[in-house]
Amino acid sequence: MELRLDRLTKQYKQKLAVDRIDLNLKCGVYGLLGANGAGKTTLMRMLCDIQDPTSGEIFYNGQNIRKMGEEYRNILGYLPQNFGYYPEFTAYKFLLYIASLKGIGKEKAKLRALELLDIVGLMDEKKRKIKTFSGGMKQRLGIAQAMLNEPEILILDEPTAGLDPKERVRFRNLISSFSQNKIVLLSTHIVSDVEYIADEILVMKDGRLIHRGAPEVITKEAQGLVWECRVDSKLAGQYVEEYNVGNLKNAGDETILRIISDTKPMEGAIEAEPTLEDLYLYYFSEEEKGQ
Amino acid sequence: MLNWNDLENKKLEKEIRMFLESREEPVIEEERKRQSLEFLRLQRKSIHITLRKPYGQRVLEQAAYISPAAWVFQGLLVLVLGTILNTPFDMKEIVLANLSICAPIIGVIGFTEVMRSYQKNMWELEQACRYNLRQLAGMRLLLFAAADILVVAGVMVGGLSLGFGAEELLLFFLVPQLLSDSVYLYLMARFRRKFQGTVLIGAAVLMTLFWIQISMIIMEAPWLIYELSRPWALTFFIVVSATLLTALSIRFLHGIEKEEEGRWNFGWTD
Image (cartoon, rainbow over all chains, first blue to last red; front, top):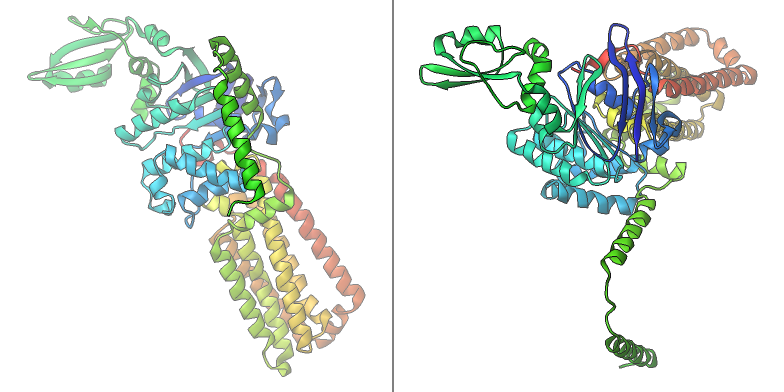
């Protein structure tokens, strides 16, 4: 099982959203990290055959996915960043509807829908209309519909956006349980979503893949870039403006700053053990500030 | 009361049980077990949960997911058309004019349903499914085409039974409907997702006003009804409007995946 991207590019009138990406994906969970505007959603839409690339191709097991068409979508599960619903649909009817579009027979669809509602913890809500659901419940329903056809490729675009921490942990556990013998690509700008479940992290910036590797390996790239400093609390605000501060913790009259910097930011700064979040901030601090 | 078959089955069951109890359990080698499980896993993988459904079956399945409101409005429209047809016969011209006015409204119901994927932001999910957005839109168009054919047939049968001429009904109901639907399809292909909701209704109102004007012109010159109802003229109008509708339907469906090629992000943040 292999998904290969060959110089994949997407150019809009004013923007180069995806810039010549070469990538080979095999079985496993891949976390696609990047700030807003990095090109993650555009990349995922091309992988789902929703958008045509400007140039480049995508191959699944050696076959061009655009030529495969229906055959490719048959083994695909996709959860978009923002998805709607038909207001009169209950959770159960929604899954049956998507199952019909995925070509699942009626009886199998009923069994599969019930099975997935149970797995995602929505069995008791199956007859409730989706418009009454909370954000977390909708996302769980979203992952359930993505799994209906037992996909070999699972593409999840910012699946935990808007969820509280408890829901995010639940979601991560669900993904982990579903990920056996699949290619799972999960995009996020929340580092903790992928830090614990991803086999490999793909870092995307300005349409390009700038980094790739296992979480613990690429985290080491931030070695020597993370510093902890104690400063006067009155001056903390100034330092936050001046430096790339990953964390700020009050300790009485002092504030402990976690600074990401190529060089030692100040006298007394101690080198700290980097985390994936530090690496993310190192690459995306300007974009995050812009948000 | 036991019958002969039951006795036979019980005897057979006993024999099987005795045979199994007399056998020794095989020793399960780990390697053999692993190979068997791997074989089962591969076999299971080759049986996919999805299957290829005949097109007709897919269309019928989608009928169950059309919004109930669409069918209710369709039913209300049929009632309105029935009421119009049952107006006293000495107001024949007014009845025919009213049929022309109602003709554009039929398309609003169907096309609102076709564009619902965009209105309710389901298009992305549906586009990634095996039977994608283009196929889904095609199925919805077919369903409402079938419903509209029934409505037209109903109007024809009702109108004929009430003494209206077939050519009058075709000229004042079918042709306006086909041409109005063609206009909607052209606008849908041109403006895509923006052509829904109030925009679609606005277009319907304009089409209605247009047909009111045409009807008034025709009513003021009754000889026009006669000329336009001639077989050759009527056939021409029907063939042209039906061909136009078909061509624009194909154009709309063909272009459905080319949406937003030039527009970055479809308006989202990434």
